[in-house]
Length: 287
Image (cartoon, rainbow, N blue to C red; front, side, top):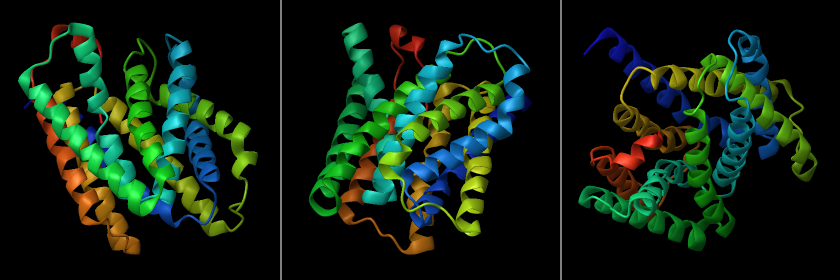
């Protein structure tokens, strides 16, 4: 393994490891979901904003597209964790490859057997997780879970299509767009306001570590390693996040959710090692 590849693996590994702790912050923050998103994204945007002007970002319109879908992803993910469980939200994010498989089929009219098996495992996992959520947790969380995966696919596809620009500058622009959109809808879920120093400091640190730090590591990592490796390493997050939440606050997903997560992880791994159809190479989606 070359030094560049080893560095890329390290970047993606630590990004996924950082993200795995984010659920614990979300489920314990004494404020509304929109305040969580606004403070984290605004902090990340401000901290990284000097890098916006270090190198011209092109195409510029992708900042708005990626920022909009990152906003949708953040809102659906945070609210899904708070109305459902952390395991549901992160398992739906891990199931994102199912959307690329569907796109691959419609684009090429062909689906290799391994991708078909991956699709079936992902579909079964999503079905189990959503059934569990709909019947035992919250129908709203189930709907938001689907949006988590779909919006993450579009966000990541947009992120990977930037032609020029510093990674930290791109992440800054995306988060400033997300913060602005969150501010527009903040009156819809204004209370409780994060008024005490502890809550504010935790959310600011979360913005610096999980958003600014995590996504900068990830952006640098995907430049150095094959996308299949990125996908495989990214599975660290859905495995560890529910574990940290269990250790922190004792939230235990029931057996239906656990089986759903297992199916999703198997499907994601099968998708990673399945052959890539030629037309599918035009999009690279990571989880």
